[in-house]
Image: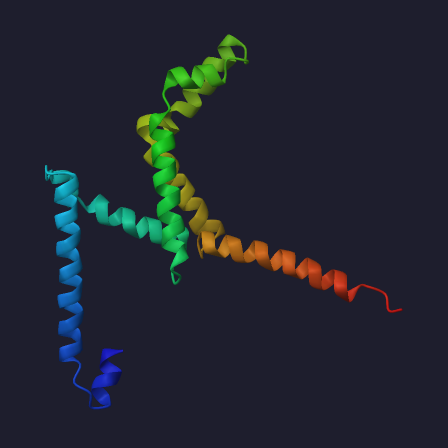
Length: 162
């Protein structure tokens, strides 16, 4: 905490300068590596959605841990690749076992959520996580581990004494 350190008499300016220099160095390195991979710098790299996606990954995975944003990033990129590749022909193949009228109805209902509309599915998933898992996917893992450990503790408590 910079303010707290200032009250103790420690000069925080050199540390802040070092932090900005190091972060600038890594940003420059990342930019150089990006140019090596994709030499065309398009305007889409400067849109707010690029940084908004990072915030979304962090919230979806779980704030306050290292594994949370990593899980969120993996989940978002996985769903982006899967949902953006699905088209109406593939949906018709998947639901071909249904009668013709019902097949067309199901494809009509599902198609806006995938393909070009995969952002809508991601938004609905994000809303579900915010409502039901405010701590993100990390909270889901913690709930599952607590339920298993609670079951083991309950079984040990109810065990009759010999």
